Length: 522
Image 1 (tube, rainbow, N blue to C red):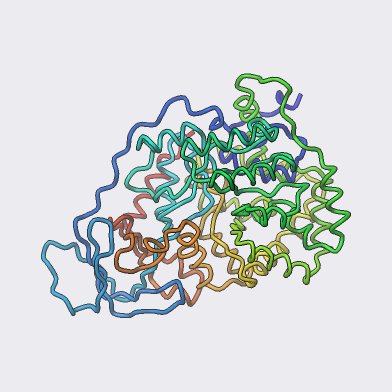
Image 2 (image 1 turned 45 degrees about the vertical axis):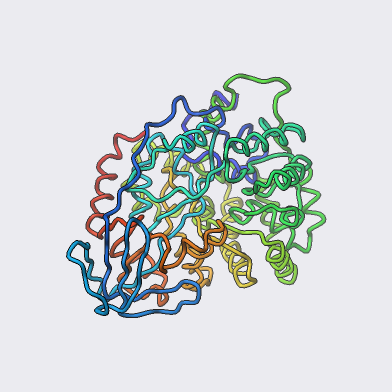
């Protein structure tokens, strides 16, 4: 009955799978995409961008995101995608062959990194990639994959062109009950993804006993597991066992239960939560079939929420103990776990009825069909019982407070949107920065979450995340001091990606092109 009642396609499947585990525990196969069975054919080869031979940006203020220090009146020399020199403007002779940009009055920071994106789920991601570049994203971590995606990367055939940020990392198939339904199965799947060249393994929803087997196997194979903490498990046990990156503040009640005065009762309730089980026999193409039917649910899992799950989250939040919260944050810090809160994803789910989304700038770039599906799901959210909608409205400010607590406690955090695949309006890095600022996080700390922290996470602190000699020439020219106001982080005068210069006018042209083509996107 469920399968025949639902229609739609999945704009952001793998991540929404986990959001939905807090909302709809009984929904089968949530978030499993056609990536699990592979793409029908590999995308055509895309030529690597060819930057200009030399570029020189004159008379700028360079901001160091490590400590917020500023070097004024500086010139940046770039050759073949690398920063080759930095010096006071006017102190060195200018070659006539160099492309020169007058940056007087501008501030230069490293390009931003969106560490939670699903952009490569689109059949043609070029539009979304261009929009990411236009808002200053020069690198992204793909949070959903497949054997076919990994094979395309190995062959140099990913559909990423010149007007796109760099792919920093990607997993293989999402771990679900269908490829990780037992200890033996999850061990086999992790070994398979390691051999396929996955950078990490993404956890969607697996049984608690399988979850810890997976963490141990990941440790043995030298490949990180990250993604979504599992209901029915202790978040602190997970990070202590090596769960590397926690997405969406959990999601659901997982972290909140650890901070609650009613921890024992709430955890027992989460253990009783119905879990998804794989069928006793293999059904060909089942994942693809169900994913097609469940597409609309993934636009906003909160619209399909079960009252019991919402009640558990609300009880956990209302019984929050600040002392326990700080102790949990300290444990996360000691464990070395990373957190990508994706506040914009939580906000668009829990505040879905806000009229501001009807005027959101992203609507101009979304395909008409995607806008129609989003409005239908939003109407369903508005029809939820008032008590449930009130619980969601009540949860979000507290989630902002939790993000601030983690940040103030020294927990390692990165910026991410959960966007990139036309899921719905509001999922931009600009809005993520605004939400982090609303939580009380400083512009400098937000800048760090998008630059030096991702570099540290990736083990690339010697090549990215700073404006320094020998580093990647992925830069932003900003109109005003980015440390003065969070809004200044998105006053972008130009983007330099791999040494190629894109003016504000060129970026506006990119946006217009995407908007004009939105009717042809599917």
